[in-house]
Length: 117
Image (cartoon, rainbow, N blue to C red; front, side, top):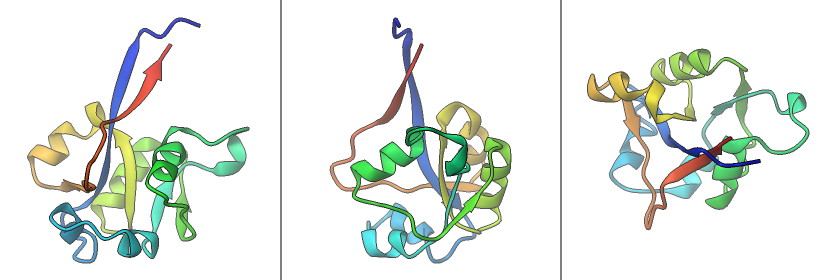
């Protein structure tokens, strides 16, 4: 398969999530590990899907999670301060600009990308 490009992703939480939005300024892996991750149903995939791969690069293996296969539902759950998620940047640009979502950055962060075929 030929790679056509790479899609950008962001780790985000709702702007009203008082527990997690502080991670936008000061990274704390333990806080994130003890927080709810909102992701796709693991049973629907034969191998880790992109967001789980990106979390594992940080040493995160979510133990608390909500599963929803709709990225729109994941985004709305994050905006309601239920937890954090990883979403494609193109679908959260407006919410980031409007301050409804906050990006969670890590020290020495590498861009979160995934190949597009």
